[in-house]
Length: 298
Image 1 (cartoon, rainbow, N blue to C red):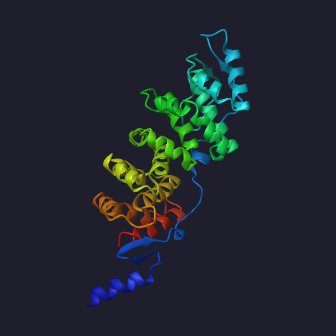
Image 2 (image 1 turned 30 degrees about the vertical axis):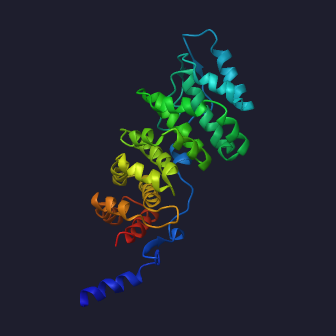
Image 3 (image 1 turned 180 degrees about the horizontal axis):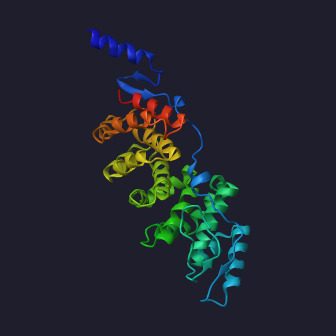
């Protein structure tokens, strides 16, 4: 009796994160952070917007660069799509991006610049832009780049796709194109920055979609996602906890028992306990999110 009483008292003292309705646990997500993702504001930071591009392959380099600049300024999607195909080799005299490889072709530069432009102008939320891009093969070409074996190509593509996935309308487009498996693959990359960005892409495809959440589980995405909890970067861990929250909840914020049990089998409680104890590594916001998320497994 004393043991059970103690457990009950502990549960009553915890925040009312959950309620039981019709036998199902429903989570009040307002107890968790609703901060905008840091991945695009920090992880995709481009160091240099002023840089020189050189090439030994093409006498038409300046013309191609001017065409790209004009196409972006006018958001000429057909021309941007065309420039994606350029294989003109280039070198850039600066570190272009905080973690991604420098683009090695005009096509890769176009993909980077396209992603930057979409983010800075908020185009992913413009209905006209969404309808216009559906009439092109831009998304298909970005997915082909994302499937490449060449790091400079797939990093550029994942960043650009992440900028589009700020809008759920693009999530639906990518779901129909079976893009989730591509991002799950990148969760196993050697670069933590890319893994974090791929995790955000996955989240934007599975959030509030039980079918996609199960597909993510079946594709071994949960195993890779939990590995990000072992990062020593507080932002990475903070984001990963929120991504896991969106994985475990269905479209009505109900805890999905099968996914909860899967995460328990992967020892998520041990990972959360470790984060909570590592006060010298993680900031208080991250520790708080870990503690709140752990309550869902009590």
